Length: 431
Image 1: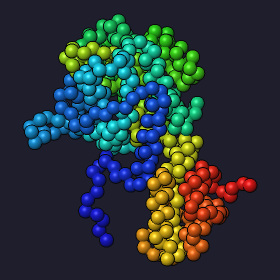
Image 2: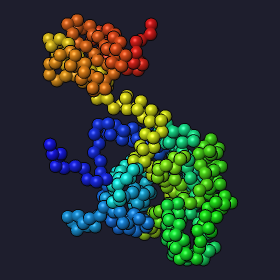
Image 3: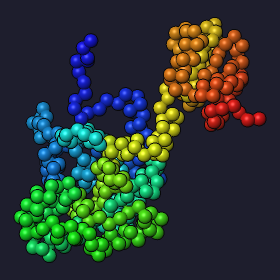
Image 4: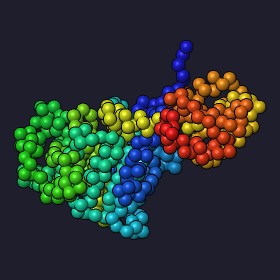
């Protein structure tokens, strides 16, 4: 038999219920960590003026835009990242807020690139930024949130590392070796790909700047090239008990041209996949976007849903934590009401309504069905309990589906009874 006529476009995803539940797990974890660290949520449009991204993005981004002309003749783009939108938004509204701003967004982005593991053409990003504070304390605060996010997903020390660098160190290096100021962005793009570039290609590219791969690699390997900002960040994170999660890695420069200082990326310790998260300081972007009308220092990072999910699924303890959450939150209902006596359907409907109104998710069979079939439906729904309404009504039976244990109760006290039961383990109550 022929398959369906239409399928999702390459690099785009359908979110069937389990996929949607996994996405919700990521979103809820991101949101809860950001809120407990003092950040507030904002949202920006998915569609923006293309000029916003061309103004100061650089690197590969401008070639990966989902760009088109709308019916009004405007040159528009589905956002490939959120920072430019944030800069535009902050430039317009920042005067209404005390500084520093600690903001976050969970939003969808689009890039026309080759779909592969950890990368699609549409993806969701967790974006966190601190605006209006130029010192390394803001960078340390931001990196600490990235670490706390990883810990909240169930990762532990040894699972991941935050590699920190500073573009100022590279700018000093470039100046000392005669690289023209206007050529420094091109030079940094070469450094950004140094671990992925073929040796002969790297040699050829660096030769254009009268540099060798050995000179660049020696600079990366020398810890004395750490910037004062990095040292201050390390001291700050050490005081928080998080110093062991970071390390100096001068090969990190980030590909976007708007970065101006400290940059960092979060990797799994085995470095078996691309960066889980990355970001850094972009002190001139808001001034650039606003044509100098607003000048605010800023630092931020983004974490995408593709890579973090892959890492969770490949890390046993993090995967187990996610599965426990899904068992509790991805079920269609908590209580499935089994109508064992059709003469009690009206009472069953009233009970379902009362449960739902009390905040207990409840479901039932819409049409008369054998009790055994209703129990099958209960198990397929993922419900923890089956509440049986039979000839004994208002007496009720509660079956714990995981343990096959059974309890009895009364319809008049069903709300309190079930509310309490949902807080208990899935087993017989101890006397």
